[in-house]
Image (cartoon, rainbow over all chains, first blue to last red; front, side):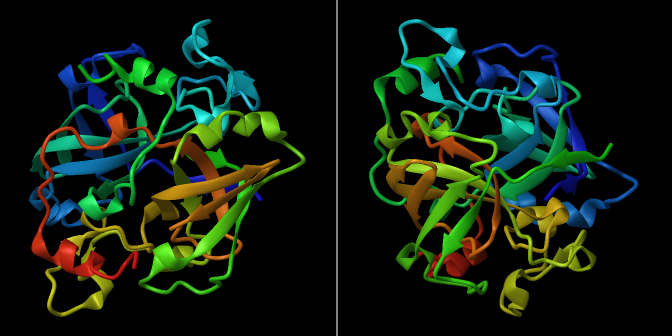
Length: 154
Length: 154
C-alpha cells in the first residue's frame, strides 16, 4: 500500500546544508502553503512554547536509504545498530520528527529555534507539543546515543 | 509536490476502534514487513526504553480532513484552535506521532505499551527515543490541552 503525502509548507533556514551539530543556534521559519491554508490553521498555536514538526529529508536520494544496520555517523567507536534504532536521515520514508521552540506566529509563518531541517525542507505536519506526549516512565538509552547528542543542539 | 510513503509494517492491537482515552493500558505490537526487512533493521533497539512511532490515521476519510480551526473533541468548553494547534486525527496528511514504551523486540516484532494506534494501522517510521530529543527549555501549553490529556494515557 503506497500512500501519498503533500507538504503543508516549507522550511526557510539560514542553514542550507545538513550539518551534524549546533541546531539550537539556528532560527528558522516554516511558511504554510498559502494556496491551501489560511491563518486559522494556526489559531491558538502561540499558546504553546514548543511544536513537533514532521518533515521530509528531501535531499536524501531514495537509493541511499538504508534498511539494515550501520554505525551511526559511521563512527567506528559506536556499535552497528539497525536503521530503526537510530535517527539518521537515510531511513525508509525519509521522515524527520523534531520538537523545537516556537517563538512567533505571524499569518502563515511560524518562527522556530532548534529545527534540524535545512532550507527548502518540505513540512508534512505541525503538532503542538504537550508535556503529556513525552515518554511515560524513566528513559533508558545506550551510551553511544548520549555521545552522539552531545553537541547536536548546542 | 506529492511524495509517496510506504508502510514499513503494521500495528497489531486489541483495540480496533479509535477510543479517546486509556491508551497506556493497551499492549500492542508492530510487525515489520518481512518482504522488505530483516531483524538487522531493529538491531540494538532493545537498549532503548521508548520508541517514537510515526503512523498513518488510515481510517480517517481524506474528505473529512480539517484545514482550518475547530474545538478539540468538539468540546464546547474548549476554544476553537487551528488544526496545527491540536493533535486530533483529522489532519492534513493524517500522520500520528507517539512516544511509547518498548517492552520487547523479537525478530521483526516490537511489543509496546501506550501506542495510541488501532489494529491494522500502517506504520511509517520507528525512531529510538533519546532524552535529548525532548523539548529544550520549559514547556508552556494552554489549560484545555492539560484537561484533554487527563485520561488519555491512563
